[in-house]
Length: 161
Image: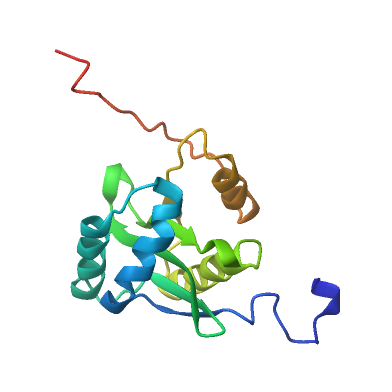
């Protein structure tokens, strides 16, 4: 497809990417429900409120195609978390509406996020993916992610006494 583009065009130019706002809550929940099979309204209400009240650093983004909600990416910027000396962005939620799957919406979100973070001097983006989410792992791999040199550890308190 890229060879068919006009000079100076990107394969994501059809996707408008903007800051995510509290008014986006309903469609974010709707897209997310497709992946999780349940509504996480309170979770996203809290995340959207945090995105508005945190620093002026906007890393939670909305994607729109032809005035239709197409996808979202939510994250935060951390300074010195887990012993790392530099700032790192954390992606904690990502979703693309089924109607826009395969239409480079996720790529547009990642491209804008990367540009925003580079402009701030942030050099690292991290996320976590469940082992069985092959499509999401493939997306992140294609976006340039690789396994981190750190191991994520978990203690299930329900199983340990």
